[in-house]
Image 1 (cartoon, helix red, strand yellow):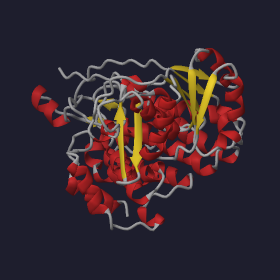
Image 2 (image 1 turned 120 degrees about the vertical axis):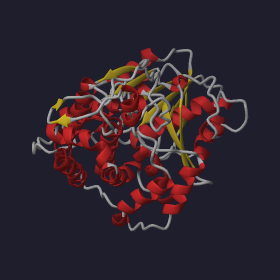
Image 3 (image 1 turned 135 degrees about the vertical axis):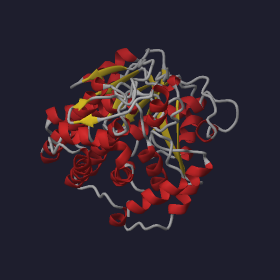
Length: 429
């Protein structure tokens, strides 16, 4: 019996304990045969798991006012945000009003793909002012950065970068909360954090149950003024988060499959509405909740997971500066094409259930599935090839070497190594 513990969902990851289908077939002496909507044999059964998510979610209009009750009045609060858009859309004013009885400090300038160097300045400020609560106000980058700050403020064993680079344990963290203004990463309801280091052009992650937000406020109205590029990035990021947990192999999890399909189909349906009318509250609300559900750990319970798209995408961002979602829209189709044979059943299932492609042949349905995913990305106005950003193969070797140096074997079968990474990148041109 295989046991998987999902105490928190770690976005990128080490898949220790996930057997390949071949291993399961050898152990059980079973074979597999699939047809449309009906599986005569299963490759495996749902993996054991433990699921716990402690985040309190406050969803809807006007919920920012609840901040006054969520943070103790005696707390010294450090408010963290990005480039200042919250001062233009009214969010900043709402936060300050809600915390008027609290002692507050501010730190601004957290970048998209937050830099370690910037975050350490916030750590210094937090320690100086003896802050005991952190409030992230912004998108996933601000939330991720705040999680690192929460851990780094309490880290005393050396350079806090070791938390990311060496997997140093997080023994304690400053409590934090989140006011979300950009749905994308799901960081508002998980213990994941991704941070970049400018000096070395690295982009690394850590996860810890100690950096879950105590609460997250999700008001869809805060997203009305998002630029189209950020709206699209959020949709793509959410889509690929689900894809990483869905396009693997069957382990007899029809509930999780349909939960994933529901999120993906909702994103496909709601995206054109929100691009046509950015102040469509219903569509904004649906997309916001999809983004949270995509990476709060629930759909990942008991299933095989991939995450190769994210790992390769991180390196492209680190070396070329593309937005995170831009890399995902490029790499995902390439990985699906490269591993179509092993992912064929799930790809065909997706074509059948979401795109309503019923050809009776998994081979053709799996091909159609990938084509339609690319078409969806393109309909959002996001590129699906590196060449569209004028990026060639000049850093392919560096990307593959970096992943190899970290000892990473990617994918749900852990069979994507240096050679395969290079071939996937070639498909991405």
